[in-house]
Length: 415
Image (cartoon, rainbow, N blue to C red; front, side, top):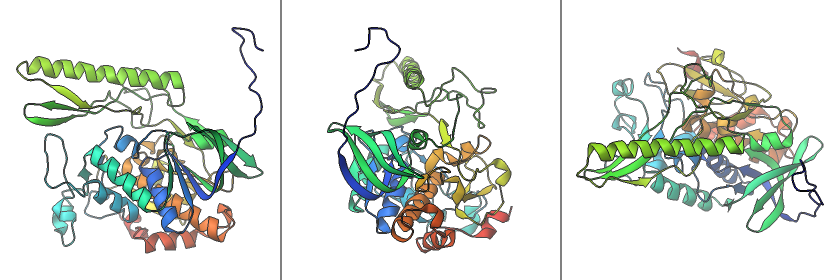
């Protein structure tokens, strides 16, 4: 028995029951994880989706980051289709009218079928949604796809057999258990599974305070976006501290507390400005609103120098939400682990360095890489004994195109 104050304690070895076996196990139920799980299920795989919270959508819903950023390049050309477009449309499917104060607005008319091509050059393909309605819609989508969903469940270890992850060790109210997996998709946002499995990862320490929230006043519901200035290349220079890591429990807690402090300050200012009103908060983030934390160092790494550069293993495209013009081809190698033949990343933790991480971390490319990861995982489980190195990229690209994915070289290379 360890003495009080000892640096370490010894945890007894234990037998961990296997709770299930799946072709594909997806860790993380944000937009990337939802896209991966649904895509894998639609391609015939048995799928388990693990989510540590009790709702889907991640930052989009629980973080109240309620803008579906552009599916276009800002110059009138759509560059994201497939599940990315389906999930955008789902986010506003039951929105009957625009609510300006809450910043809820549907698909622009010019981007509907038969829309004005000239207007598309002036207005981007975006939408803004009610996070609660979207949370409910995502849950129904996943369940109806036949995915086995486990809420309140956290991955705490990865069991390896040679060059593959054989089981994920998870914990929830039922205790500690193992899930046998054909292919694993890490959609945690923080490369948690990649880290636990021993893949190379990169962590950043320049996250700032951030927390969007809703407040109700006499004139309705208002969205209040709050964030300290941050660096698009995840540096401290030019950003407003304090700064936080996303892979340290103490620092994540401090970032949450500090962000809620910003919300309290804004509420106090609103109440001072409107003393005759009863201004009340009605929705605050329930997760840490971190931008760039830890990511996989994969078989390939996307950089800013890859703008307008086609790659033969492209599994999707994305524009740059910050400016019109740039288009990136997202390589399959940026999703694949190096040490493990059955491990993929999807979402903001794919292998994209700090020069372009701010582009790939947002909702649309998360949906693109999620769909590609789920589709590739299902195909590998069925046709390549869950060995991603044996899956022909051409077969994956063909299936993504069949499902509405945009993989046209001309969309990338035309500046």
